[in-house]
Image (tube, rainbow, N blue to C red; front, side, top):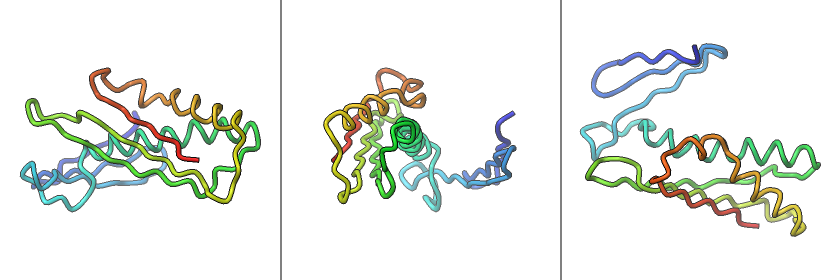
Length: 134
C-alpha cells in the first residue's frame, strides 16, 4: 500500500503516506461546495505534474552536473464544467536566472520534462502545457 485516506467530514480528507508518515489534507474547492481551505484533489493532480517534472529533470540534471537549485514552477489548473474535470494544466518553470544553460542542456531538460510519468499517466484529452523558461 502507498497511503491511507480518511474522510473527515465536510468534504475534507486526510491522507497519510505510509512509508514516511507524512500527512496532507484536501478540501473541496469553494466552487464545488467546499471550504477551499486546502489543496483540492484536482489541485493535487496539477501539482503532482509539476513535482514529477522537477523530479525527472532533477535526475537528468544531476547525472550531468546541471544546477537546478532555485527553479520555480507556477501551476495553473483549468477546469471544465460539463463534465466537471481538469481540462488543462499549465506548468511554467522559471529556471534560475543566474545560470546560463547551453542549448544542449536546455534540450536535455525539455526532453526530460516530457518523460514525466505523471504526465504520461494523465488522459490524452487533458491538455498539458509545459514551459521551461531559461
